[in-house]
Amino acid sequence: MKSIILLVITLAAVVLTTNAWDESEITGYHFHTYFFQNNKNSYQRALLFRRQVHEEIERGVLKGCRVNHFNVVPTGPHPIGSFETCCNSSSLSHGMSWFMLNRGNQSVLFHPLTRYEIIDHTDRVMFLGSPLFIDLTPLEADRHEADTCDPIPYVEPTPQPHEQ
Image (cartoon, rainbow, N blue to C red; front, side, top):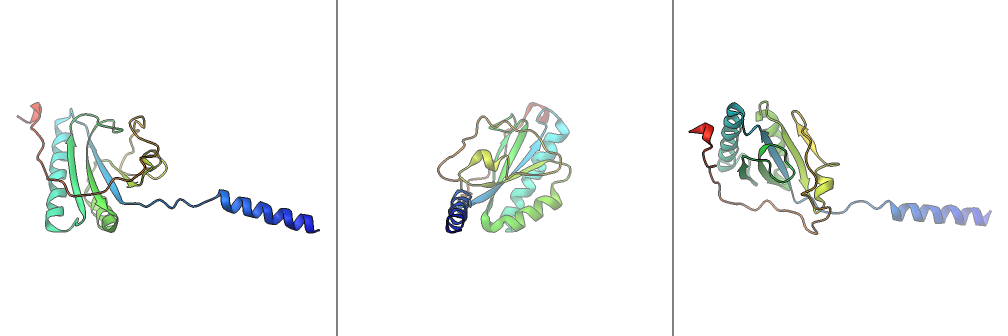
């Protein structure tokens, strides 16, 4: 009987040590808004939406967020044109609410920022709108530190041929 109890205690200890919780920190969140870069209407809607995001940041509605570059070609893992909004952890509720209510028909990929880029873009990802397949090859399994949502200057994109 003592050996059975010892075996059960040993197995329980093994299970508890091998099922460790992920204790990495979520430093912020990305909202990747997608558009078809060769479609004038889709491009214009995305450009307007990006300006609206920036205005909401300036007004303090999306405090703790920043808008990043307007990518008119597939960039990184993203298969079509996109722009990224980065919100720090304390801004998640406002950011998620605002994007849910205001994204229109645009697809938005939402994921946390940890040091584990591939997991963040697969197991921890959500889509607002239609999902898209992304290319995981540019991502690192472990970056050793997470991205942060430090402020960067807002820059208007260079006009594209179909805008002129």
